[in-house]
Image (cartoon, rainbow, N blue to C red; front, side, top):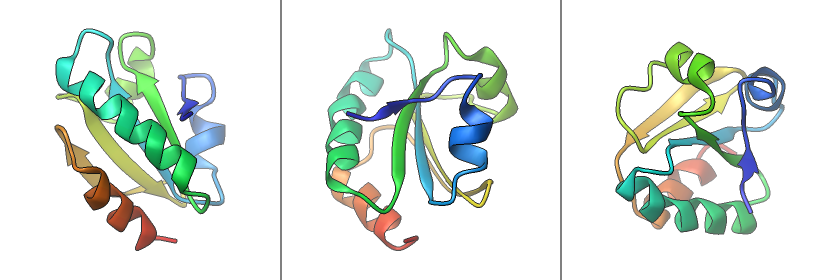
Length: 104
């Protein structure tokens, strides 16, 4: 199961992480986000070299705004506190996995 990122833990869990982090910005009312949910959970279970989690944009306005999230689902990959990859919309699992493997 993917981690849950919040405004309270984002800096520590994402920005200060020693490993790359994939953050899936989503909302419960978003149909495409619901399609991405199982993919994110599967990647989280399969990959050990990266941290993978989700952030509910409805509950975490501060971070969503700070990260300029305009459309969801949006996925950002952070490495050393910086965004190194960004994806918007439903993405194939293999594409995300390949991109993450290239970082570790």
